[in-house]
Every structure is written in structure tokens, then in C-alpha cells.
Image (cartoon, rainbow, N blue to C red):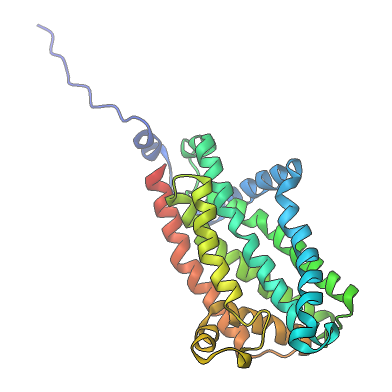
Length: 277
């Protein structure tokens, strides 16, 4: 008489991958993130439309806002540029990061992440990789904004170091805020809904700030919101670094806010990504 031993139930799908995945070290996570960042960079190079918002928007907005609002707010364009250029820089880099969530949702809908899910890689790598590649887009936006400002007559008192430091603060702010839109990309059902939700989040934060007008010209209730708006701290930090080269408290508040956003939304994005995938 033959005794049949019960075969243990076979794991399928994600369970099988989870059983075979070894613990991934921090170094391996960084390497995998950079590999996926390189993939995203090659994708950008082959799809030039992804650079439209960080190439045309800084040039268009800088020229348009300078000549439309310069005389009304500061009396002339030259006097308005020190107030406006840091605001345009912050606005451009922060609005550019909205595309991160849209592109993530498109890749998820196309099934690109199904392949990543079956690989023994860190779960944060598919999310962080494209965001590292997006640093190139933010740097382009910052460079073109300052270049257009110089063409219009902007002369930053902070010198080269102040301009570079201000640009870095704006890039860091854009990268950290991109985690919010990455999370939105993991919970929304379509790329169109990601774009709509992102605009509802970003546009009030950007335009209800001190980016384009002095806070003292606003009504009291609106000035109160503008003063606590985190985007205002980013703009003030960039303005102080670029215009005077001074390291103010706004720089610390801006960087602290960036750290808090990443600490909250990076884990949320990874957790939601694992559930949805």
C-alpha cells in the first residue's frame, strides 16, 4: 500500500516572489534606484515632450509676469525682478513635479510595474528611480529661469553662490513635494484623475503664497495663510539666497518642511504601491 504524502500548497504570484526574495541591503537599494533612474532618463531622452514644462514654462512665465505685473506691483520691470524671479523659480520647480504622479500612473496602467513586481528588488526603487531622474528636469527649470531673468535685467546680489544655493533649495523642494504626487499616483484610478488632484493641491499652494506679490499688500486673512504656507518659506529662502546671499531662518524652515514631507509621503507611497500592485 502506497502512502501518499500531502504536497504543501504551492505559493503563487507575489507570495512566491516574497518567499524567494532575500533581504535587500541599503547599498543594493541605492544601486537599483540608480538603474531605474537611468531607465527613466533614457525614456525622457526618447520622449522630448517631457521637457516642455521645464523649458517653455520658465521662459514664458518669466517674460509674461515681468511685463504684465512689473509696473502694477513694483512700478517697473527692473524693480519687480528681484521679487518675481525667485517666485517663478519656486513655482516652476514645484509645478513640474506634478508630472511625476501622472507618469507613474501611466506606467502602472500600461503594466510596466508588473515586471518590476516579479523582480527581487526593493519596493521603493521603482518609485524613487524616476524621481531621481526628475532632478534633471528641475535643474533645467532653475537654470532657464535665472537665465531668462538675467536677460531681462535681473542682477542677483547673492552672486553665483547665492544663485546656485537658491536653485538647490528649489530643486530639493520640488523633489520632496514630488513624493506627494507619487502617492496620489498610487491611489488614483487614472492619469487624468492624478493630474486633476495634483492641480487642486499645487495651484492654491503656489499662487496663494508670496511668490508674486508682497505679503503686506494682501488682506489680513489671506496674509495669515500666506505666512504659514510652506511654499512661501521656499520662496523666501530662494529670494534671500539669490538676492542677498544671506542664510535666513526661512532656509531652515524650508528644508525642515521638505524633510517632513518625504518622511510622511515616501512610506505612504511605498505602502500603497505594494497594496495596489
